[in-house]
Image 1 (cartoon, rainbow, N blue to C red):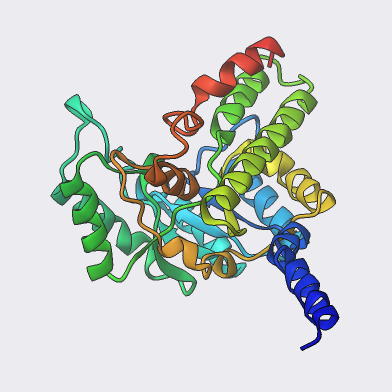
Image 2: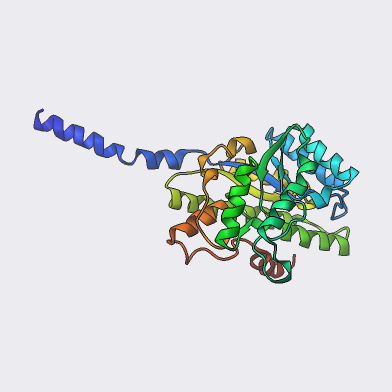
Length: 313
């Protein structure tokens, strides 16, 4: 090969080194919206039917299928059955979120043993497994997956034996604490303006999505199909459509939960203690390289309440 041809080929080869990075930059981020804790007591002046319909309407408008993680004690009634049935009939996946919503990492009087936690999952099954769109996805309450190796590994083994996979999420957030503030405001003043809660909600979810998306690429070296944890509440009934629109306007693609969970990243089981938090948080913690950036817990009201206080929300 002539020297000129060799140098030309070498230059072409060198230019290809950065192609994967360019692809990653140009790829459209994907996000699935998933929901925890459906309940039949409504909130912020809305009935549970209003809340249910508001969220389902927003999802239907965008033609995306979600996943509803059902905590049995909140829907163990005829009304609860109607609520979950509406999601099933709309084609959304129905997952298991335990019956009693207990913290698997708790100590003291709230401490729960591995056999008790396993039994609580099984107690919830009769309330969800009869729906045609039931899937064996289990989401740990509070994203807490065990404070000891025995509990963590024991529960993971139990899930495998029962045919479940972990219904974790890559993006954790605190929409629930914003909803609490909104409900209190409406209770004290039914005619109060709520745009401040909407704006804070959208900003909060966007900031957490950006944090976990960048962290995922730093930890894994490639993008993932994201799932965000939201809750079945008045806040989402009012503003979910705005939230989805924001992600679309900023270049993200809303996808079905089932498609998101096909990403192999959801097979990961971070070797950390205490176990839990969002999947990306756990994978970052496992590397030992991000300890200065990872707060514990990953998300909580203590981070958002001071910001809302400052805004008088």
